[in-house]
Image (tube, rainbow, N blue to C red; front, side, top):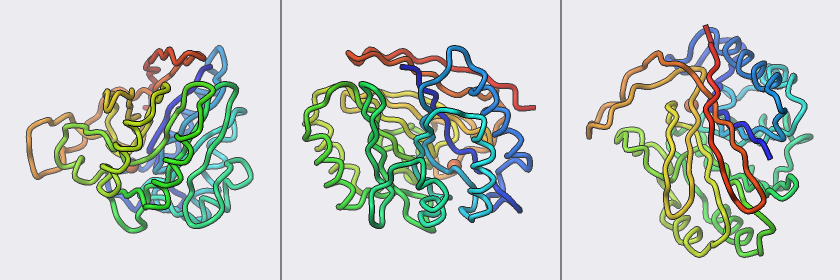
Length: 260
Ligand SMILES: [Fe+2]
């Protein structure tokens, strides 16, 4: 099973709401998608961990749909803090099996792989939360016997990046409760996230964790304890390529894409 992991495209139709987003974010996104579409052997699916668009308008999602159209495999997306639930649901509800109700959580299956997608969006805020209803949903899903490995997708990392200012704006509500749920789970679990705009990997509560980078803008590596958000940096962009087998064996590669 071959999975691509992308994040934080921040595609916008009219103008970017986020000053750091590159003016040609759509062109950069198209380059990444073109590379994924041509990758051989083909991917079985794409995990897209939020900030799909920069503003969340219907026009933004319409443009994103067009950007993603070369991909002929399922794209499992979760909302980021720049997304909007209503327009995301209405644009992608035909291809993503969102649960009914307020939150955009969902479960999907791809062969032996189970995908659990979590909605951590607090509309209008940068940081994220797992509401009690979403925690209950996750606990219920993980209480069922697993047939194989599980990919857990969410935008706001519950695990630390060690970039202090960004960790304060990551998953701030429901994190401890999530740890309790994960600690009781014994089968292979991989947690994929975004939000930090800098790729990194971690092992947290026994699970492999990764944040995918962003083609829209990247932030510098600054591990000093600081109040200030690290500045922008221009570094080569790569998305992750995961090969997963039924036993939970997991290989990670970085696939570099020239954006300029
Ligand atoms: Fe973002």
